[in-house]
Length: 412
Image (cartoon, rainbow, N blue to C red; front, side, top):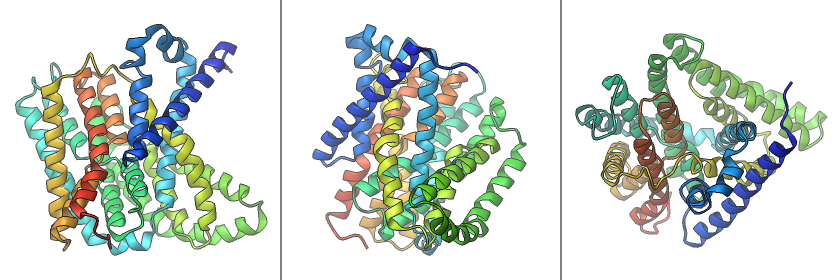
């Protein structure tokens, strides 16, 4: 079995150290300006990446992030684990009874928050394909991708923003999380159709993928939750605490993630569902949750968000009008769709608008979608940059816009 060489180990450790240090520095700066920590971590990635460091000192950037492909593969593996763990703690923090109580509202918000931006994201790229960077291939496939990219909400970013604003466990926070969960599952089911056209889906047929995914979701939130609730007391009583609980929680998180990855959806959904089922148990103490939360949220999550800025040069691939078009479509589609869904669910206008702003936060999902499309030649680098900038700006603006729409009123 191959292993990392001496120089590659050093390179990997330097990568991790530089990412964590800069992420912490800029997360602190972001919070000083009342921005979510995730914004600082995203900006740290852009500074460490080809945009800033690669321009100012290309030799050092190449040494740190380009000179050792094996170290980069190892880093990619760590980043994949980071986003899985981030979704695991997101699920762990969800109080399921509050989510169920928001069922009708969550359905309204998620469906309208998916359909409206999907239509806008599909129609404009289809009829103005050359403007959006489409050059060759299947226009329908390109437009389906754009519709999906505009409609998916980045659940990890939403959760981080709500946590930073102390809104996560409020009624509004729960309905946004529930809506984002439904929104993303449907969005990824749509994207599985695109992946099947591109030959990049899982080992199952599209019909089987959708069917098993739905069954797995229902199982984890009903029977799976009941089984976990029965096993946890035995774990807490017979294994060392908190080590036994933490190690087994992580192990089953990775098993659930592997299962949904095999289905061709994405590993993060398995991790999220396992987190929901585990966190809803009365035998999962708040202290155990806090230990897991602090470890993942301050080490693994920053690595994921910093890695986004390492992908591409934002200066050389920046197209102002393309970025503006993507921003307008994303803002209008998501805020109007989700906001109208909240309004239909009985929320007052200001709170409905706040829900729309909350659902508008993007990030991880768009980056994953964009990278797959970029690697397969479906989009060009300029559109990828536009999608990443959209993810950053929506993440930066979501919290302040929510605060503005609520005008410091106490969230119920």
